[in-house]
Length: 135
Image 1 (cartoon, helix red, strand yellow):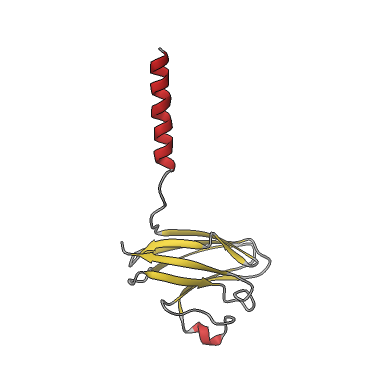
Image 2: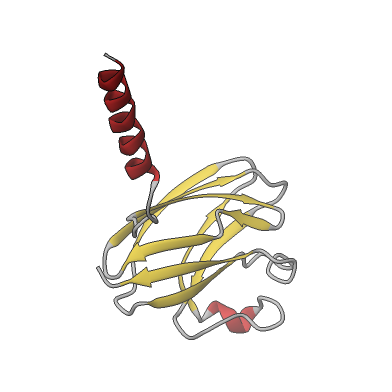
């Protein structure tokens, strides 16, 4: 009887370990919370060329952006008019609200900078990384 209980325990333990192990693969949905001055989480992995749904929740005291910059472009010292043309996709979320939008992930794998374009937010550290990987 003890062997049967021990075997059952080992099977359950092994199942739990397998379910918890490994890194998360790319996802076609992004859920992110916006506050002063951060994105939580601050890294996202998506498959290239796929439709991605972004759901934002603004828990901050001011409006926030989730703006994905084009590959190879980054914001300089602070986000300004010059950076507007380098935005790949953007969604804005009002104070205390949620927003949902979709975009097609870039075809080219790489790391894309995500910023909040509200004046002073980027320079205060409100940035993240979008990892685009081959599907």
